[in-house]
Amino acid sequence: MESEDCLHPIVVIKQKNKIMKTIFSSLAILIIYALLTAASEPTLINGKVTDDQGTPLAGVNVFVKNTKRGTISDIKGNYRLTVQPEDKILTFSFVGYEAKEIRINGRTVINVALSPVLVVLKEREVVAYEVQPAADMTGAVRGNYSMKMVTGVPAPYDVMIPDFNTEGYSTIHENGYKDVLNQPLSTFSIDVDRASYSNVRRFINMGQLPPVDAVRIEEMINYFSYNYSEPKGEHPFTVYTELSVCPWNSKHQLLHVGLKGKSMDKSELPPSNLVFLIDVSGSMSDANKLPLLKSAF
View 1 (tube, rainbow, N blue to C red):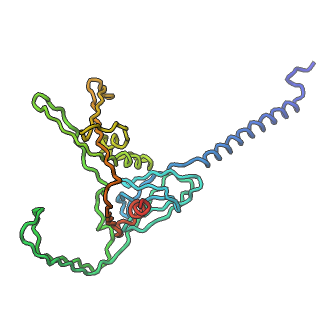
View 2: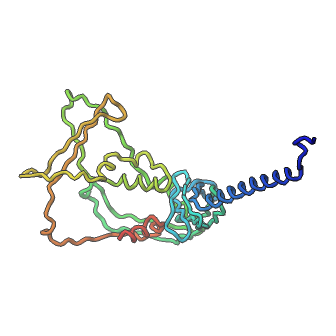
């Protein structure tokens, strides 16, 4: 009798070929599915924008062409932007530099160098002829002066651009601990500034970490409404307090102080005249300046 290993060798080979074809077909389907899935998902693009000398440019507008989706470069010239599969071109624009359009072509890292625009400044004379030698209410002394700006050769516009981040924030100094036996009085601001929350959200939506000093805790707390009850009687405001253990240091406690002022009847207020002074100079041409202001109005 023949051994089982020698029975119908052609049938065994055909069965193996069929299994291999099935495996290859499954792999091909998985690869095609992965490619289609990847092609339908958003892609994060990052890069650096510099001038033609390699110096980083801060505040460059980076947008998906023909959309309002974009971001700006940070102080080191870096940017991050999420694009959709149908997005094909990125635009880079900055005051004083030639705008560029760059095709994405599936790339996730796109570095761009912008060239300055050459401008010619004509001779200009500015004369202030008001004489007021005595100090005014601000303590300043004014008088005659004359200033000339003369140039006869083309100059790159970047000589007028500051070499620092114009979107700056003053440094926040933490309050120190006070000995209440020696300093029993404490004051705190009751303003309602709340811009920090929106500003931090803007940076996060652009895929960037906000500058440290842009994160102002009191403004983020003030962003929300706490629905405090109106003050009653003759008192113009009420005080609400809440004491809790400090989340990051259990040895300390946090005191939250909330103030609610009395609401005024605005229906009896006289009409008001509002005057808006809007800067429409060339420095306002960026998408996040005058166009944003116009859309807000």
